Image (cartoon, rainbow, N blue to C red; front, side):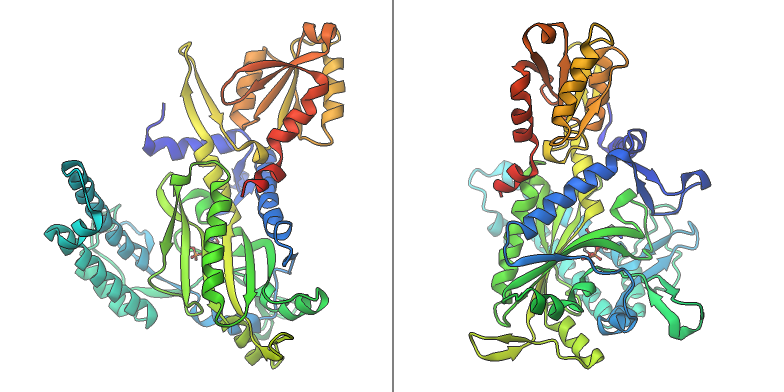
Length: 512
Ligand code: ATP
């Protein structure tokens, strides 16, 4: 059985062994922070997309979806601020030769201080019956001291990041006496800015005029199409545009499997609102998105909000929805109130008006935008890591099961004839032919039935339909439930409705 430390390693190994995720171009030893989705991974990924896409575009009649190109006119990235400001501060340790994001090293110190506060709070909560947390954190000398330190570090970090002051960043790392986790030394280089965009050339000439970028976010494809969609769709504010697509970032530190990739996918929605109403919508989308996540049933405690202290250049409010990944709580989704920054900038750089005419107010304005942006790969990792369970069974044996929410599972049902003879395969095939239009089925007749059940557990198939000799007599089969391992006998005629009900993404959406 795995302990917490190697659980993540086991999840990664399992993902490869069972066709979910492979390192990219593995036969050439892989490519750092790039991954391929295998036959089961692609299905799971598609189901997550469907859950998101339907939530946005079916449940909200004022949200429509688009699919913009990855390549965009290079001025797009000048206007959006990415050419000048999409940088991360990087620092190297000369002894370990490892590269880090300077801001993350500093945030690590803050996290440790926060953990210390939590420990003090936990200790005190156990001691006093009517424990008042708010009172405690403002009066306990040790906690007050920790909080003061956190505030001080945050203020210096915010200043340094805001002013692009890399020397101040380095000074902070020195003052906090941060050591490299690998070498244990403080032999750091200076902090340098590093632009995260990948560039390439378009056309046959390789001079600078032909330089274009692989988009670092999908959002800009929505902004530049704002008026196209609004006019052709006769959209009235407030309305949203949703998109799922690839994004590329040359991440400095990319060591956490699919959590931080150089090529990844985003599911973004830009919601255009009347200026002044953005905070109302920001709160609305914060709550809605949290509900969407929690409805999956991976455990509500595994999600929390994290408000941004250091706001990006385009935002007047921002928060993350964090998930309890194997390496701790980390950002899963960002929700940002982006003001009119992007549309205004595109107006300026393109010279084209990007305004909305509000017939109710009889005036034109540049709408404000509230954005929800979730990484598809991080969603995948959240589902995979929380679904992965190593179980000891009553008979002393062990099994690995992926308790993937049934509507997201790669296969909904495995159809298994008990033996290869006596007409059982023919009966099983007939059942499969009836189910396959509505449910992704997996057919298998090789090996003992117990072994086949275990293989389905390992890829997260929620149901196994077994065809046995009784089936030939009374047209019933057994349905085995992946999680409880219980079997029930049902009429073949009832199988389809029962499984569709349990595995439907639409039913999941109804619970939001
Ligand atoms: P982080 O702080 O983790 O680098 P970010 O704040 O830069 O993320 P956003 O620009 O807000 O991320 O992007 C929106 C979402 O896209 C993130 O919440 C995350 O789920 C996903 N995402 C961003 N960068 C990556 C990446 N390198 N690999 C996988 N997913 C990513």
